[in-house]
Length: 225
Image 1 (cartoon, rainbow, N blue to C red):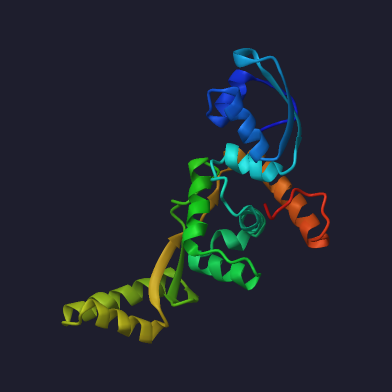
Image 2: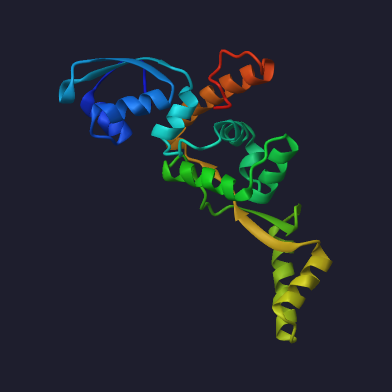
């Protein structure tokens, strides 16, 4: 995490993946970071004085999110993910519906991209052996249990053996159960990285509190850049 301290050229080069001072300066300027530089070339030192949006900078540098990411949407997604225990276990479709209902439009594809970034950083595990079972049809989902889920698939394969096409057997499942039987691993927070997750959540919650309390004038980093 970028901190308010003095960095060597070597440290900054490693953080931003660039080999010249001009490249480092462009990144710092682009991310709204105030700094001063002493020295030149490989002897340069960068004193980081202020970071206008620490959440955005952390996500780019430490979690490898693209600079073009909509960080306001990411902020609220993290808020639900790290603070609502139920949200962790929701199917991606339901996450999308919940967010949209709260005026945060995120597609399930974008949600999956966000989760994959967290997985790559080892902050979450998406491949647990605990599952959430549900029936999905369009934008609606109905929760179920393993027993009903298994029965629905048992009937599906029975219909296939009787000569039904895949589409016909699936249509019968939808008619009988209200949707297609699906299961999804419940996301697990990686406790080894609790300190990092808590650090992220502190930034997130601080911004949410300010954004909710005062959307027009905020001392929190600008969420709309």
